[in-house]
Image (cartoon, rainbow, N blue to C red; front, side):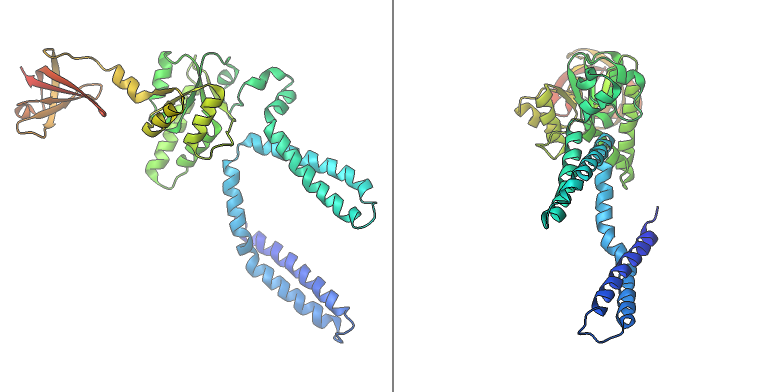
Length: 359
């Protein structure tokens, strides 16, 4: 929806009215021996022209900033804040009736102070205690310990009993996608928890102008949908947002320390920083390396050699799990499947590297 024409109309009316009022005040000044219409009409036209030309520019930047901020605010916070402001303003209105009868300047100033004070207190109180408030609306305090579910959550995932350790998912592991396959096997005994700020970051990536980032973000949202629809997988969305951190990784670490949770991630830097702060980490890449098949020197494996190696005469192939196999004197077997014998296995930071020779 385009707000430019609407802003011009409102700006023209508002500033035209202000110009009219200024003209009326000046026309009543005894020192100015001028007909009232000679002041009212020019000031009204000037104010209207000022509003027509400049109102969109004056409002555009604040409106854009407010739009971006509102997209980052969870819907539960918006609802709670709106209800809190409304309740605070009602209380302020009731108190302002007797207070407005006080002598000036108290009768004029105090009601305005009450409006701002109770409006802010109402919004802040309900946002901070929104879980208790919504639990009361649902008719039970036992819901207090369960994180709020995201809009569109499946009833099964929302109704699951929270048992076992809490497993916080970060953005990288959701986009990676392997977490859905691992969870499906039943090896993750705990509750998969997606903080709202991680979900917001995924949505921001999915809305990116860059096609690669946009596809990664959308894949992450699809992975969450798969997790929600996987039987026996407990997944909840938490509205807890640590106030002592601003970056997503810092928020994850802070939240994990607060609730005693584990973090599942593929992020190397997050892995190291979290462990330095005493937070337990489950790394999908480390798990993948741990479950790869073990080959000992002397074992024979079938391998298709697909390219040349760095050294003269070498050929390179890959196992099904992605492990690279360097075959000495294997260049002549490129695009062929041969039986190779393992000679050496090296463990590197990037994973395992196997050396072999053709049989």
